[in-house]
Length: 278
Picture 1 (cartoon, one colour):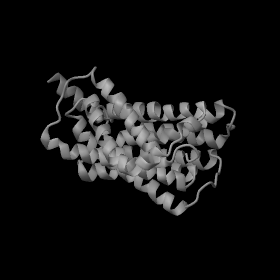
Picture 2 (tube, helix red, strand yellow):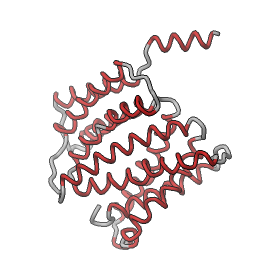
Picture 3 (tube, helix red, strand yellow):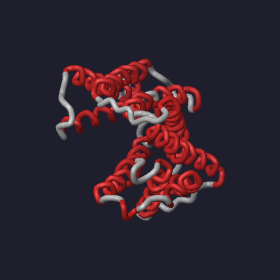
């Protein structure tokens, strides 16, 4: 973006590509029918997680800087933590709050001290606002999806989620999709588009939804702090960055924070064991 594909056109490519992959994958899963009473919640999940979430993030990224987007995304676990307590009455233990706080400090350290500053941003304030909106929408999606995923298989849930997402995103990105000059796109850019569709859309949403069947929404959201960590590691492996003590300390805080946020307390483990014995 934006040399070969505009933001909204790219989103339509992501959603259509992932929908096709999820429909193919669904043939290997159970045959389930969505109950009529769950239609509204499914549409809500599509609006939050497929449509408005992606639209806000890609447009915000086009207007703002990569560093700004990375910093603002780190508020997602905090938003999920608050929404989990309010909407689904999830019990928030001090250990999880401490873990999310420590992870936030580490992630911000990696982003602010481990990223190249770029200023190819035509409207930073608006871009930042859209990226913040993306974090709120994605956090809300995790909460809404948690209740449905307890009822339906991930393959069933995701194929319908992305199918609805096509109709949500198409009105925004149809013209930009039409404007793509496929013959002018070099091979390496086509591979990049394929990676975004398969890797960061299909696989990411699939793994996320499977994780949501095993973890609380607030716990799952804490893993967003690992994203800048992998960014630094990739930059080091490709020779685009160098290792410093600041980055080592920040990475350690990220890992510690995610560990604390995702670790089950000893009391919960004992209680579970007692119930199993009974």
